[in-house]
Image (cartoon, rainbow over all chains, first blue to last red; front, side):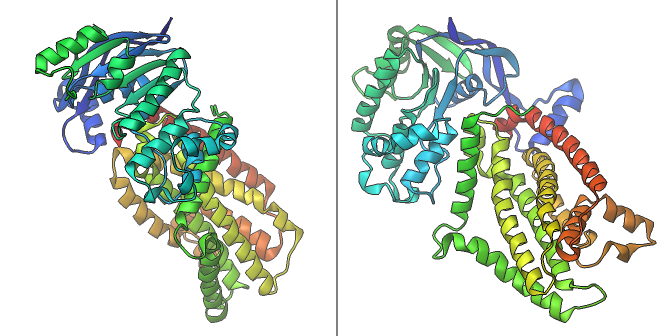
Length: 250
Length: 257
């Protein structure tokens, strides 16, 4: 059974800076029926993720990673092709989206949890644990605006541990964390893996992808360059760009 | 049409509370401003119009207050809703929940202020010697119509704003005009005999809502049930249509931001 099935999707964007209305009108009523000011962020992409499978998405900036994840999440609509989803999806793009500067740590846990559909009762019961995991015991009444980026990341990730999703889409979500934070996150991911959750991770750093992903999709300028076993695809990627394995990627 | 679960109501609650908290954050008096702000403003309006501009209309201060309070609610809700999808772009473009909840939260938080302002108006009416009558129990019906009106207008404005920001300027001009084409400072009878002026005033839904509130608060009389049912029906149809359109455009919000 597939958690996600992506079939020949295409996604284009207008490249001019005119209002969206202008582009839409030109597309529908302009000469030749279509606007020329478009570029394809994704072009004819197909793949599938099995239930419990972890897929890594790699590629340079502008390769189409974020666009692909947003299309899979349903935040963008494809111009051609189809995305089929079997299960409850959570899309995490950078931690802390939706947390408000003027609210305290405690208040933001409820706010952030609500955005991602975590029940208030669950958050209430585990409030102290969430704060303790994030190492913010002394800051529970501190306003979010006074927290460092590391603290924000820990708080957000700590809260998302109570998410009850079947499919997770993560777009550079751990990029702000330090080594010890990543280590803590890795333990949480091991739990997710054991629970049979499906993951799609887009990242520049290969640490998480190498450790957890079964397969990797390599995108270049909106097209698939390679798709297959993690070790093979990453090796080919490294060879193509002269990256040594032991050094930090990219 | 509306598919919501407990999690959505929980999110709506959090969004609404955060709107209210953020507004008075870092101020010494905090939430007290929600009461103090309209109290001071309405006090000035009441004193000015009650003492200085007493004309042919009895209880003119209260008469104007009711109009201003309802106009302000309409204006606050629609202006904030128009830009909320853009202003909260991260939530709009990077999280998965029905985006109309952002608009609902704006309307709920502004309606909380509206209810306070309406309460202050009733208090002033009592001070002015108007007294209470049981008809005041019908005010929640006016509230339902008022919320229905701002809901469909807000839903439409929010996605049009994403397509073309020009709507913001057009709507601000419209709001300035609306002050004068609503019978806030004058009675609807003021334009009697002028077909076009009468038409503009009576097709304006706020006219009827302000009239209903004035009947209740000033005259202690109930409004016409038939008129209420007609307005409810019209607003329900408009909510349905605006909601359908909103949901059709919603999948495109991510790229329109």
